[in-house]
Length: 260
Image 1 (tube, rainbow, N blue to C red):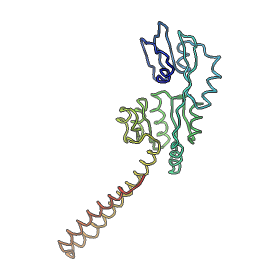
Image 2: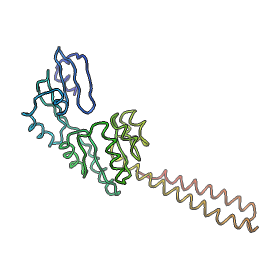
Image 3: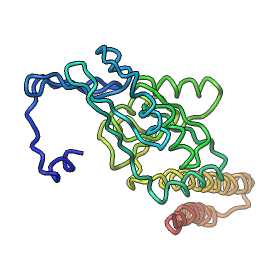
Image 4: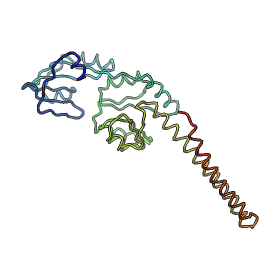
């Protein structure tokens, strides 16, 4: 946004007393005037009259845009509508997760209309909008109370509490350090397809571990009674034990051949 202003050769004025209110907006003093940019709730706190522009705001939100209201000295001054460009791989990633039997839910601070529009475009069935930063963790807890195992994916500072509360926290590698610190897994690639890859690889790893445990127990279950009965020569027992270890390692190395 700042680059867009500079490209239009508009001079950016210095501001004073800048304040960011998470989940509401920002405000600062510019050229002696108080400029505020934020949500409807923020404007209501500042006693800004915005009833006449709510229809225009709703129309923009129905198009999947996040709308910010601008006020100068508590008087409405304009609307700013922004929209993220959805990656071409996002729909496929959501479809892959659904095919794996995973319920996909979007939790966002955007208006519910905006959230619903983006969810429809991405193929997400459930969207929870108007969630304040501290409310994301509460939404995760609600899902857990319903008996669901919740994996939370996020990339921002506001996502950190929810990432820590979730059964599995996944941070997008292109996000903030705070999110990565709070998460259990960091997805190096900044795309949703990495989520399905991580889950699929985890299942492969668990299967591999179970195979290794089975063969390890099988060797010992067969070898120990034979050795106790004196039917197994020491060198054969040693060779069998070595072969057991080698087979476990070789089976584990097969994971390197998995293509994501």
